[in-house]
Length: 167
Image (cartoon, rainbow, N blue to C red; front, side, top):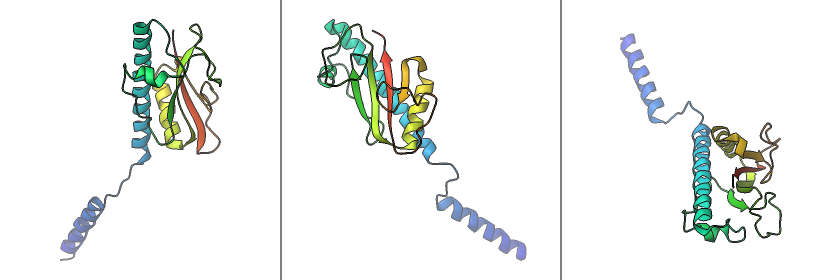
């Protein structure tokens, strides 16, 4: 009789654990992977659209109206998280004010945010590792590279992943 009661309690406990949705895996792993995949997809879409625009228009994408100009070649990808934005630079320095594009300068697409969480940072870092890291820099600002080998001291932090495109 005691064995029957213990067996019933074990079954009830197992059912409770399974039904209550107890997760023994870190939920942030999925979010980090989602940020990585969306970052990689967005960078690939924008760089492909940049190349298509450059071939069709026989000129480089203008910095001041890049989002409008590129719409005919790609649907603007949604940034992979709150507070992240896409930007483009055609002078190799992300300097303001915007200037006329220099066709011989390095052109870049940047995904950045001023309040990036640790999960978003890890996703961006994984995207950098998986893509051609010689063309990507991870830093506090677009064009920066200090996080290629380090991690921000505290989160949320200013983080930017810059994809340098070949002309």
